[in-house]
Image 1: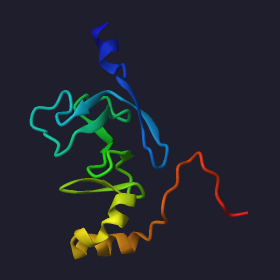
Image 2: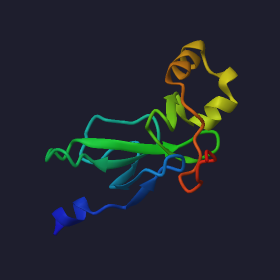
Image 3: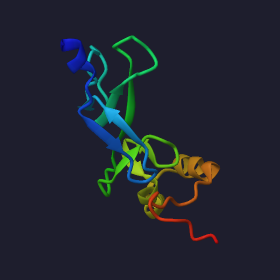
Length: 123
């Protein structure tokens, strides 16, 4: 029974930009079953479903440090620079980021995200 409880998710993570959903098994800076890993942000974490090794985990996402929006770690939704930032907040505050970050974003050429529930205006 302890094994079943170990794999039971605490909830479902949902990115507020791309609508990615995934069950998470822990939340915080210290992933379970790890001894020397401390994350730099409060993260939603799931056990890696692709390996039986219980020490392996995936970071799903975190809250934007500006607007508190829940965002995944995908390159189209957020970036981590000392803290997690959603791309809309990055674009609004692009002048506050170093040149290297601006150049990286320019390479990505990411169009602005809209919630998945809103249809495209292209007809």
